[in-house]
Every structure is written in C-alpha cells, then in structure tokens.
Image (cartoon, rainbow, N blue to C red; front, side, top):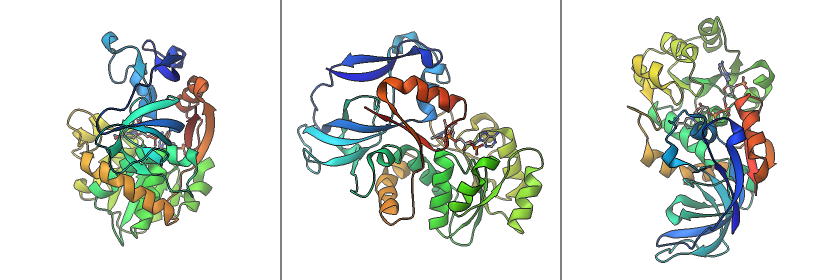
Length: 311
Ligand SMILES: NC(=O)c1ccc[n+]([C@@H]2O[C@H](COP(=O)([O-])OP(=O)(O)OC[C@H]3O[C@@H](n4cnc5c(N)ncnc54)[C@H](OP(=O)(O)O)[C@@H]3O)[C@@H](O)[C@H]2O)c1
C-alpha cells in the first residue's frame, strides 16, 4: 500500500486526507511511477471546492494532475519507456500519491539538469501557456499583453512569447514586478486605469492578449487595447470571455480543449528548459501530508510560483 491524498467531501482544504491505496499493476500501455514531486495547481482545489460540481457519487476524489518520478514497472505494449527511467508525467490524474499508474504516452523523459521539483510543476502550466500562445498566433515582432504574468501559467506565457520573439507587457502585483522584468516583460500593475497604463507601456499597437486571471477587468482591457478578438484568449474568464467572443481555452462548456496542442507541447517545453529559455519558479515545497496547507496558501493567493508536493 502507498499513501495518496483524497478529498473525502466537498468543502475547503479540511476535507483532504492522506489514505492508503493499492497502486495496482500497470496494464497495457501503462507504467507505474515512484512519484518524487507532484505539482499543485488551482484546478486541484477547484475539484473539491464545488467549482466543478458536487456529485457525491464521485467521492472520495483523488487529486493532482502532474508528477515527476522514476519508472518502477511497465505494462504490456510499452516500448519507449523502461524501468528506471526518470520521467515527467502529464496528464497524470491522482498525482498526489507516492506511487501512480499513468499512460506511458503521457510521459516525457526528465532531463538530468531539471530538478524533480521544477519537473513536477512544468507541464500543466506550460502546456496551457503553449496552447494560449499558439491560439493567439504570437510571433516575432508582436506586442502581447499577459494578464497574471507572475503566475504559474502567466510566467510560462511570458517566457514562451519571448522565445518566439514577441515583446510582452505583463500585469502583476507590485511585489512581483522585478520577477516579471527578469522574465523579459514590462510589468504594469493591475487595477483601475489599467488600459491607459498598457497603452503607455506599449507606445503603439497591442497585437494580442492572454488572460490567465479571469477578472472582468483583464478581459475588458484586452478588448479595449487589442483590435482583433481572435487574438485574445482567456483560460480563466469563461463566461465573460464567451460573452466578449474572445477565445476561451480549457475544459468547460464551449471552450477549446486544445488537446493536440497541449499534448505536443510536453516535449517542446522540456526542449525550451534544456535550451535555457524556460524556467519554473518554485514557491515552496510541502510533504504530501501537508497538501491542505499548500492549498490554503494557494487559495489565499500567497504562493509566488509553483507549490510542489514531495511524497
Ligand atoms: N483553462 C485551462 O486550461 C487552465 C489551465 C491552468 C490553469 N487555469 C486557471 O488559470 C488561473 C491561473 O492559474 P495559475 O496556476 O497561473 O495560478 P497562480 O499561479 O495562482 O497565478 C495567479 C496570478 O493571478 C494574479 N492575480 C491575482 N489577482 C489578480 C487580479 N485581481 N488581477 C490581475 N492579476 C491577479 C497573481 O499575480 P500577483 O501575485 O502578482 O498579484 C498571480 O500571479 C486559475 O484560475 C486556474 O484554474 C486554467
């Protein structure tokens, strides 16, 4: 038996428990991982706080979506992954666990230069960012507005857009402006007057906007400064984004899941890391048993970077 985190009810982080589970044996096309690091993402708490419904039949809920670890066993029909390989897994449902079965196709090799912590927090935010940058056709010479430039997804958007030759203006709280500058973007503070600050920072046309925050402000400012709504995307403001007829990306009614783009992004993200063009900022690490503490920090907006669970 191994430890795994589950939500035993719908509610706040107090519903999380560490329980014993049988990891099982990998079936066809699957591998068993010893998890060394699991990334924490807002979707993890949205799973049990009611954002995705409160169907009692789904309880207890396993948590987590991404992990980095060592392959302990492989199932039939697995050709390109071997026992002992160090890999990063996304999509990896139930990743808050000491051991986990994932599809071999959902793993990519972990480069030795990438720490377990950074590997565990790379792929969910990174593939979402790649989807947003691709959907808005960000390329050389563009000026791009990124809402939430200091966040898990936003910081990836900034770095990928910069690697494509774009200029980036990024919204962030004042405490994160130095970090946003280090990423290569011009920081602007969010709040009243944002559109004017963005226009002043741009000094000309803003070609595209990517919202990773989901406030009405972020979307309203985006449509005020970007002419072409096909070049505006949100990953968090689903209802207002749909009303404004901008691109709504992710898993939700009417949203574009971008499955192929996101799956193909996994190897591209690792390549960018190896090339020194992409980094993951770690806010803090927590033991698996302290997942609720990590979630409280996330819900309070206190994490500057990715939080990582270490089984
Ligand atoms: N659709 C999808 O496929 C998909 C995928 C991944 C994530 N998401 C969603 O995207 C959102 C962001 O995820 P994340 O992992 O990047 O979260 P995160 O790391 O917590 O980042 C959130 C960022 O929002 C900024 N922020 C907070 N309040 C703000 C405000 N009023 N105005 C502007 N910015 C503000 C924060 O900046 P400061 O700290 O500098 O203030 C922070 O950097 C979440 O809602 C998540 O569920 C969606």
